[in-house]
Image (cartoon, rainbow, N blue to C red):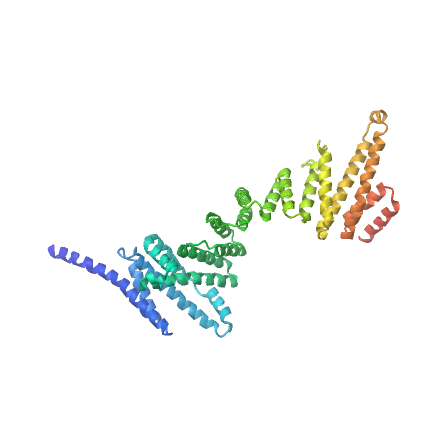
Length: 454
């Protein structure tokens, strides 16, 4: 029994030394490999031996949680990636003469398993040995002369990986592998933040753009959220989150991001316009008008803001039953709403925008005058005998007012027709107005145009 106990105790330190020896073997083999690389004749056998040794050390309880072990694993994995990249570059030499183009293609095509492993090791070291990682960061920011030889090599690998990650991201983007590009732009930003304590807005933003190009809704949400959480957001991030959540059917979350974006960037036109569209979709006309007023103050030459405002006021002045589409009673402030619609349509017309905007502004203004003329005519015809007897000027007054608005509609619709000469809706409206105002010659001319266009 004593012999067994003595044997057991004797084996334990030998086993521990053996595991530490695996780390030493990995270190020695890695250094041997790096020497062959320096000589221009990389010997992959040394690198394979280093990998075998470090994997055994990482499987052992005594050495698997040591920062140094993971630092060697990071260097070995990165060296493996570099070897694969070099092989990819060799393949392209015959087909791609341009050096920069060849590099981008190689970065886009080289397998990334080893690079991913090296990247994971950086995070693992930060978790297991933050003091060691802090030493590396200080060396990179304050001067590498403070680092020992091994720490310096690891620091240089970490720094190179950050640059390499950006190259991989650009290569994947060029190869139109946008999903992978998004991940690598994000990794680059993360490494910059971790190693240099800076907020790498550019790479995080590129991750968001790549996710959008990939049409990957989950990544769009993930990466844009990270920029907001990291306090490096722009209006683009809030707008992207709004659109991504709308796309997945979560309007509640979408509107919450839109609201937060408007608070963070109250002067951004994109967010303002999205919010306005949401107000319009939900029938919140007054809120939409407030936004449109703010928008037109920032961009007074944008006819669209005036056209949409005019349309809202027009609808408020002439409400309809949502179910039947029938006209409802005019509001108490009809005159005010009508004048506001008229003013906004007229402002849009005065700006002489591109064809569609100009046509719609002219047509809507003409249609509003026409519709009000029709309303007054209907009102005149609906008067009772008693009402006419009581006030003999009432019916003629309404009819005269009706004619006044019919005549106001005609020039705007005629101008609309010059913008869209083949528009049958405008021709039909004009034919009717010419008849109502007693201009039979013009009515016939418009009728002939309609027939010719069939």
